[in-house]
Image (cartoon, rainbow, N blue to C red; front, side, top):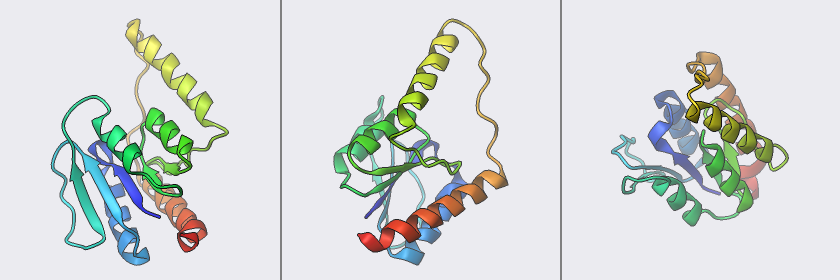
Length: 151
């Protein structure tokens, strides 16, 4: 199992949690982004820079996935593609996406996009908080305990 990060919008605090988890578990962690990202020196932690453009990083992640890999992303369409490939997706607030709920999440995302396109201010997500970071760390640890030994 490998861990992939849709890193362009991933909060720094979440990256730090992932760096520690990679070192602790020995799992390869790859951050994918279209801009430079600082990563600590480690044979387990890699950075893959992709060209700028719509969904370039997402497509590169999906192309490189192997069954059972984990992807960290807040991008619901990317999470849907990840799940379709037999992989796992966790968002930076600690929500594990599932095949049972992803369709409803995609529909809600599309609905909100339609509202915004018609000029309705839908607000945005709440700012990330320490409780979000804690929830992410707990979900990641739980996932890794269940899945890392199987790979």
